[in-house]
Image 1 (cartoon, rainbow, N blue to C red):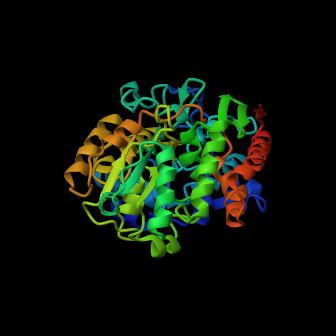
Image 2 (tube, one colour):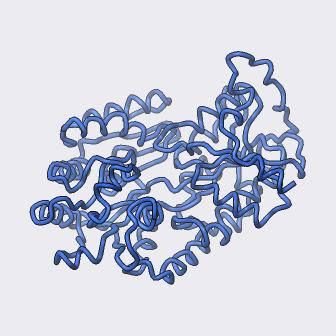
Length: 454
């Protein structure tokens, strides 16, 4: 049975969609499989359960290692792994595919990983009168003892009306990554404030052109710079209410700072995950505000920047002068269990393993675990590796400094930014002048999703 699973494990997504993928051609061929066995034991309707049924798990490429670790630890559980984009950069593929399955009333995967933190907002809601995709986890499906051990606030994006609908994979708090070797060579100090950060960027442009202090080419740029500036661009105030005001001083100051650094070349409009970025800036990244997972994703990655051991330092996110430092949160990832699963026990076992087990979260995962016991071990393991030039305590501290004024609505801020702002920056437009356009784009997208916008 194990060999059979491994032989089938990376099914292409189109095959995984099955008859739901050709819904428009033959809807009736997909009928069936949606019958319920009542309210069940976990607060939602359940289909008849089969503890021996194989579970289908959707992951992005990076999370295939979680499936590998689970298979090694639990060879008795039959799983089939399907890779997809994980809704990266606000592609909304998770929601789109589940809507197809909802219409067909069949085909749902048992477990889904998403790179986004806003999916619980829609996955917890009924679709066209049918039950929600996401299973309620906090009504005994996942033990309260397990839920209580997640870092305080980690499950907020997963919680809707007091119920938990997903488990966080890792925290994505923003810290200030820097090259300690270069900083000392140039005679610079780690900036404690954003004003110091801007001043250093201006100095780098004059004294060491070609070196950079950040990047704005990725869709999560607003989560790094604007969220950390307390910009009220995404203040979710109710289940379907949002306040959007990009005219505040907090939004203006972040935009003005970035305008200066973009113009002088120290904060390029290039994605950190492109070959162009790696070719142009390997050995040239003096510092970079970014999420905790940048460590393994771009710095200590032989396919990316390949920063040598003993050079990479970590500092707390800068504060705006006269204020306490706060940080944004760049993804982190969430795991969902389908309420339609025929094997909820196996699905729960997988999701609990992926988010809490040392075999994955401590030994394999590149990011800072959301599960507190694993996070403590992860930090010790990273520090004992000898790779970092400083200790990792700033990462831990930043995990408790995420500003609460930026919410998790059903619409994607990343998709809005990528469509509206990234091309405008490429055209040479100023972020300060783009703020009203950004506000309008957020307002329009929120209203399309049924939000009342203030």
